[in-house]
Length: 476
Image (tube, rainbow, N blue to C red):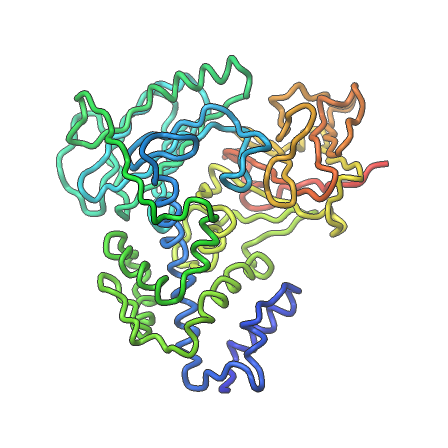
């Protein structure tokens, strides 16, 4: 085998990261995978796999979420507004890492035939954001309290290059792709009274094709495709595609979801393996002897970034990145966020540190009692809100006697005499006097996520990672 410096560097990073390497890597040795002169083609193919991972994942997600005849839970036909009416509980398994801070108001659109017009009611000062993602997972627009205020507003979401006329008072938002995912979030305290207020607002949202604007309109029922797998997780569905299936789908999607101009150098390289923007995939150019290994190695390279990418920060047991929402040509980061947090916001809107271990690199164990301590004035500096969410080891909510899945200042938290704050993370109640500050944990392993919405614009310490996230410590 012709070993290149790139091969050695990548293998070295894998070992330094201490991550588990798939069998595909082990075969890059004596008597293993012999690529020879085809090594360059192999790396180009895995680069192309990484490049296309967001677009393929978005399409597979869209298929599953819209493959229904009518609105049902988290799913709805294309062009319908999906309105989640309450926070999920521990029985909810549709998506990993659900949130119990904002109620989703979402829709999947195809703006290729004509624009869609979104009318937003007066939100009466309530925090909300309406990120719009293109097919490559870039947040191309994000109206909301931070950017456009809370007064009533109307937008036309158009296809790339659309140049028609819009009604007065309608702002044009041009999508870079035909696929658009509107992933709106509205803050809600979760009380019956606040649920009712948010439901009223949700019902005032309107979404119609431009040709139906100003007219009575009922979105058509969806058509169910029985061939679509509605049970297997989307990531697993993507990962089980063969290389030929994957690149064939990617090429088809690129016809209506064009790459950006900045992608030209990468696309020039990908022509060598038969992937050309605007054309069908030419499978004859993809070497048969390494096709089976491309998806495995490609996905391993994506997940390895969590360990070795310098843009992933680690602080007191918390890992996070502020390179989300807009990715440019950082294809590895874009693919990583797709794999572990599809739909992530721009950092100006939200940053999501996660913690799998305490500050001493010990996995969390529900048999122990933990505390996170915020000194006076050292809570997350946000203009929106912050919360800490508890998950089991599979990123699902934890059943508990007080039905509390996240904790934040919207609860009646009790502060210490010196103004500092202690939050208790444990399986058993810390006692009646401390239950207001209790985030219940499972009896076994658990994970944490700190959500920080709208980092304070006058204090950039969250985005530049100079604000220190406190460690989670075992308490006696």
